[in-house]
Image (cartoon, rainbow, N blue to C red; front, side, top):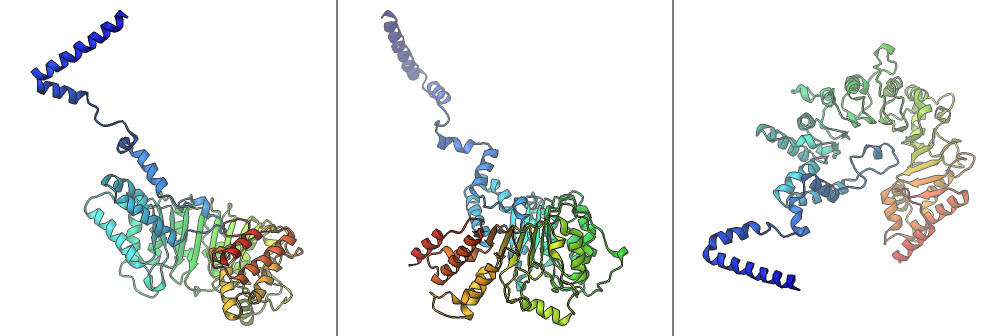
Length: 500
């Protein structure tokens, strides 16, 4: 009891001394209060500006993340996976630009995310980026090119990029991991190049360096020289980390199919897993000699439709046993018939099933016609009428077939008769004798998925898919959309109710 009274008395004396001191020395008292006063209130809202830079980078990374991650190499090794769309890229860039305008600190943090993935869809964008990198170099500022990890170029034919702009970007982007050129550079094959740095050969060699980090490479050949001849030196320097390689050509090289063995450059790609080719029969013969021990996925679209050619046969005879996923384009029997009319048919059918005994996944196009050699059913491709171990078949361009068939045979939107041919084509995949191990059929078209699930789905489209789903159920085969999600009758009924 006496202790509490003494404590109370002591507190009153202390307050009296403080008040007296404040009257005698007002400035000193104000300074003391300023020292004792906390600099900011202890609240989470006020603590955020003092977060470490590493934490801010993680926050901004999550705020601007794209799904799937365009910088994840493993996601793009399979040809079944749906690539990033340009609309998704622009949407992500709008978010990044908005966050970069919040403050100077955020602008500084966002530079890495603004430049890590660059999608060039017209020539003016390439010129603006090249000018930015050059200006930074002249002003002595750190180059934003060091942040570029993926450079994707896909432009219309009349808006292709200038060669000097692309060469400038490559010179200031030493940390490239993914480089994709889909016929987007304005290289004229018959002109004299005033700047030797911008010739097709030098454009390819600009990607080569002893410390190259390239893991995914898509190139277009703009010259008449077969691709491997001017590309092999570059690949020898970048082959250490290269996991994905895509080669395409604007034209069929004007060279003989019979090349001396000593002229064939041999390239070793030790970790290459996926190879996509849009090339001629001659270049296939060259690639047959390449060393690719880890090759698993192959996509082929022959530019001269020479599926029966010697180069095509050499390539699959050399590498076919390693292939587990195969995509073949141009399956239309009209094209094959035209090719056979110009060239004598082979003595025996190409044994693609024997060359690829470990094949598990096959991707074909829905743009196929009735096979005049076998009118009772339609194979997914003329070179693969059957396979004993195939478990998965992916189909592209189903949306195009639905739209084209509906316009070619106009009828009531309730009548699915225009889709009879396509239904029979897909049903042919379910023949047990042709594909006894088949377990999955996947529609690889995003547009087709939208046509099947949107609020304005046509009744005949839903009837078509209901018919396919029923036949797949009878064969015990799963029917999937482009995401790999099972299509069910409940989904079709829900879309029908929404459309109604």
